[in-house]
Image (cartoon, rainbow, N blue to C red; front, top):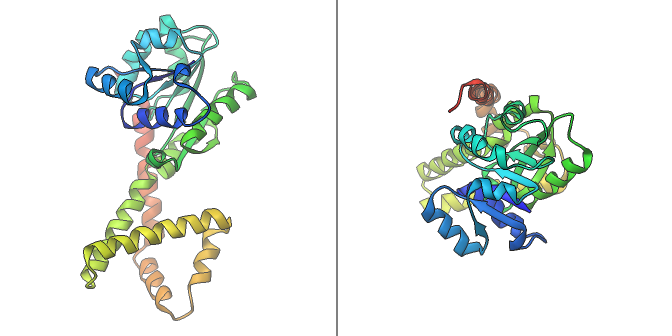
Length: 267
């Protein structure tokens, strides 16, 4: 049995993703503190929605998908009901494996994961971190579950702040770039709807080409850049504006903020 604690947007994403695999409704139990939302999820997916302590007492895998500030109180509530050997995976940003283990005890297997919003359409990128007590079988079991909403990688927990900066927050950078391209198209006389279609399809196509070809992005860039051509003119303008340095500064700012959030007291 798998318990999903928290049925917000990301929680629902994992509920839908898991039910799209070979899991059945009887394999899943949900906890959601807002009654209206709990009723909505229960009706939509036909799954049992119960109190958090009840949910974890039935389960051998627990996914925590609540806001980071809600985690300490939730851990306190569920700790007495967890069975030894239960796998608890936190998808809340900045909540360390050590913090989970301290709150839940050494008999529980604790893991940490960072998903991103493209999981909403099954195209997410989730990075899992485990500690030295985790068996390969348990790690692989959780990676398989997380893959229900996209790609999964496993990295040391020390990489999670960088992961947050690149894939966790990364979709927002792409959306900001898309907004800027769309505005530029409109300023050059394109209709709004056409500018949006051009930008969206171009970003989708470029990402799909990079994924499916397996070619280094730098090589793909070189292939489309003719010396003295229009693409070269645009790339030169980006370089002159400090594009690479700005991206590095932005991602480092996100990484540093992730570190701050992880070290801040909660509760």
